[in-house]
Length: 137
Image (cartoon, rainbow, N blue to C red; front, side, top):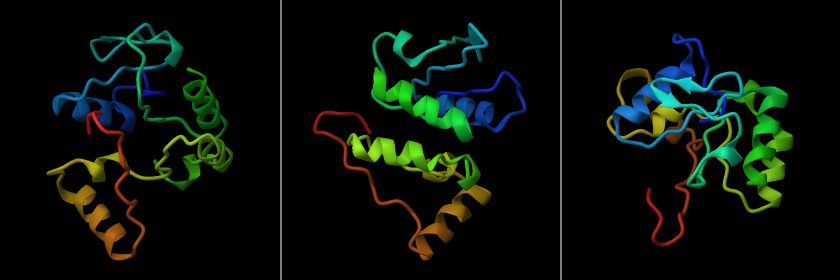
C-alpha cells in the first residue's frame, strides 16, 4: 500500500487494517516512516523483498503519478492522475482508477456494498481483472 498515512484516523489506515484482518499480506510504503501498523514500512517499492506483484496507491495528484512510476520501475476521482492511468495502460499495467477498494471486498457491509451495487446498476463497476494462470486472486 503506497501512501499509507501515519495518521491512525486516515482512510488508508482503515483499509490497511481491514485487508490485513482478512489475511492479505499488505506491505506499508511511506518514505516518512520505518514502521507502521505493526509492520516494517518501506520508503520505496523497490526495497520490498520478495518483490510485490500489485500495488494499491493511496496517494493523490502528482504523488499518485510518482507512485505509478515507482511501481512501473521495479479514493475518488480527485485522487486519480489521468497521466498515471495512461502511463500504466501504455505499458500493459492493469489499473482500476478512482474506485473505493472497500466495495470490492467480499461480505463488505453498509455503504461500501451499496456503493458497489450502484456502480453495477449504472454500468460503472469495473469488469473483473483477468489474472495470469497460477497467480493468487
